[in-house]
Length: 159
Image (cartoon, rainbow, N blue to C red; front, side, top):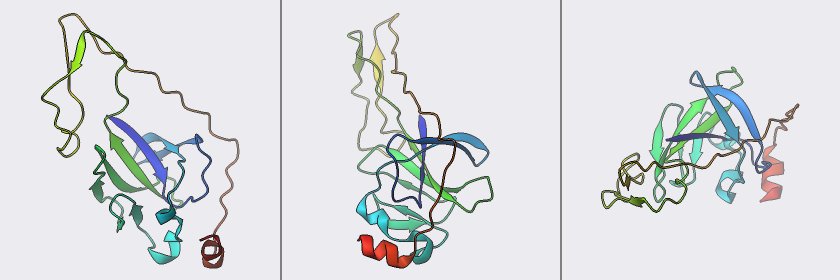
């Protein structure tokens, strides 16, 4: 299983930027991803203390989880351990697919319609064969992160 974390209140993310932080006592990598239009509302004002789930078009309180249907995964709304009040979306999914291996096949036991983690692919390999997974590089975090507080007027003007 793979774990990724999204900053719930950043609407102008730099793709590929990663920041190390602690969430629920775990070291995680905060990956800034392009935010969809639904997330460009001012969540701090409209829905304080909640995470926005774009796959559900709903908000969730810290510690609450939701499935990522139609994708195979689960997200949980979590608070950063640094007392900043920041909320993050902890994303759990099946991780990257293994490298192609002619001695390993996707099993008929795979149930893509099941809930996470039962929807993750199951591979069956010939005796002695092993699956290899690609290495996923991460970028070093920037030396300085500047957070700009958005006013409701700025968010509305951008929409």
